[in-house]
Image 1 (cartoon, one colour):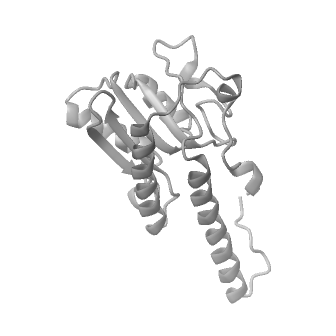
Image 2: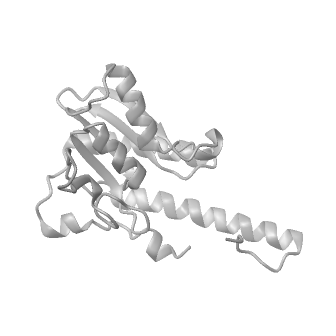
Image 3: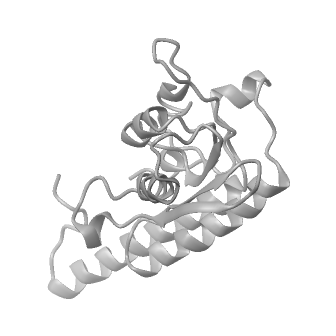
Length: 194
């Protein structure tokens, strides 16, 4: 996987380049710090290091949080933001999160962007852009699609360098371990078959 394509440090989405993006608050910054802790927990478990927090925007009360668990749960839906949104809905006993903010270390994918729209999340803050799968401005702009009944303009790049660095270091360790295993087994091929 091309490192430059996967994660550009501090890259902002097309929205940020237009200059019409809401600015992150101090609370958003604090919640991103918590999401980074969750992302590191995911990395420690061998999961892609993504963490997410849903908080009640006016009060700052954390309603749900999560980190990637796809490998351990053996579920393609066990993304950090998916788990955080489900937990927030359970805590509120309501599927609507209009007055809530989702903070996530990596730009949401199409599945998670769909859930953000369906849960009516009021604000979305993310750290690192994802040019290969990002659906909140990098590859797609699903969260702002005018054809949908709910839209939310994301706030990109919050602690983007730290989020991107965590992902890059994780994949570098993964590639290094794969090469070491391949050398130990005597296999000339070090890349996974696709």
